[in-house]
Image (cartoon, rainbow, N blue to C red; front, side, top):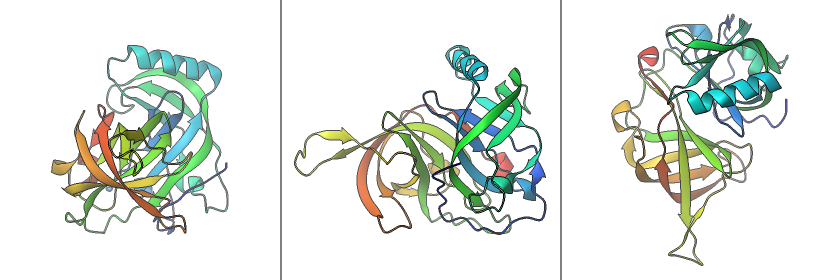
Length: 250
């Protein structure tokens, strides 16, 4: 694996993180997995974002399903493995997962569309161990992880402490440049990097989350925690959310 990026993670390892670590599958040109965390089970207390590739058959089936799913999302049910093997700082790095690709939620009536397939992990974009004993700060700014390509950006809500929520949705960002104050331009967050997007005037709770097809203003923090750190004021417009879950994070 290459170009691993970790932001703010606590690298304490649970004694046993073996489990069926279900993942949301999304993206078309670039395909991503987002681990579905649960505070009630220590082995699932991780927020993880991966850029992956599918084998040709699975990729063709997945892309065909995207066009016929009528808004349904996709998940991946891997065979059991320790999720800490995906940690970029782990002694043993995992670069693949075998399992089943599912249209819908693999635990909630989803339909398997490709069985016994292998996902190749190209990049661990984000890995963070979550503390199930921590208390959520509802006064912190509403914050999303922002990542993707110049032609398709995604937001994943930054999960911190219970009660919390998991949300993934597409977004378009524009910024007005100083030399062309009336002309917004698309913003490139940096290939393969994860930025932070704080939404103006909102606190970090489900009631104030971004909604489908909403316009808002925020601050994009590029290369957080590095010497290249910088902040940019942006206008944003969301698409329809692919996934929203709060019950598993109470």
